[in-house]
Length: 428
Ligand code: PLP
Image (cartoon, rainbow, N blue to C red; front, top):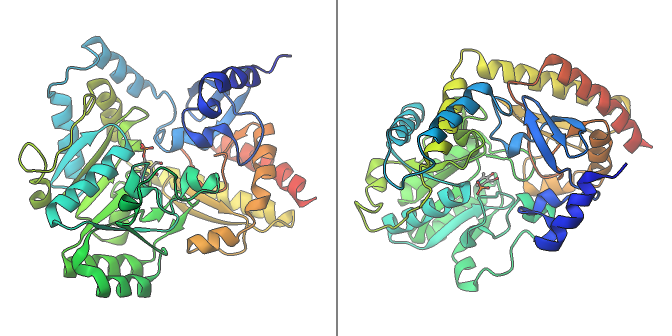
């Protein structure tokens, strides 16, 4: 039988670099043929060969209520009949902004954009405009989208492809980005002592999901909050991945810390291009048209996209929504751990809300160095073992996994069963 995934990949490779529109999709670090997806429903995706997969990528995070949820689809259909976009303000944007500001206590005002990259890029420009300073601190292994200042020692696709810093970023730009090890309080204190009055902003993933899953320690988050306040530095908590994925109060709620600016994406768009940045009123007042920091977008706040996001944001507020996600996630990780250990494969796991990490290591990593020290070499064979069994994981050892409200106990049990055979394959 013709492999329709391969046929499409061959065709795509003629007209698109690497055959894809985002690098990790090309399967370079795991090898083999990317699956070209025809449709998705609930917890499942079907490829061009009509093979079904239990999906733990969830469109890289957005699909928290499951793919093509009927209420989300009908909201999108309804919005589309009214027009696809106007380039003028709409009621839906007002309602979305009100919802976000109500749900996130640190967000007095918010601006909607179309991607996480735009959100972080704009947040940094705003922090620089607000403080009149240039320096930016980020942490090794954290990914914040692909704007120039942030492609320095980054995670996600850069790490997957083994080039944590991108070519094409001017030295003048990367010189303004200082990179520190994640969870390293002494390094943070030293840098603030030396350069605190030149730093515009610190940006971090509170749970780093782009080097698999590494939590910030409470000590690290508290030190960060205190140092930023003391030195007038804007603390940008990048919740593009964790926002409404780890819980209704986002990661900030878990740590009991308020960002000066928060960036959001993924879940708040429900699978459509919606992202946002927002925070303290005195900072947001520097945005055009009120202030001198410019940012704009033809598609910002697009009504069809906002309809998907807003409906998703309503669905996640159902009582018990996150308890259900957590229970399924815990059952999955418990089963995987038992299966791995029974096969003699080292495995440790992490879970928060609907986001999880699995590591081929005895201990859960606490830093980028720990992640790199785990047996990432085992991942490609495990990945393909699972894919062959009908389980779709992210094609990279450096990405978090996502479970949705649509995953059933039976999906979880099937996944564990598949993993038993996949672990046996890599143990040999
Ligand atoms: N920030 C974080 C934490 C992310 O995980 C991502 C994407 O994975 C981004 C920013 C960039 O978002 P986008 O891919 O929508 O540009």
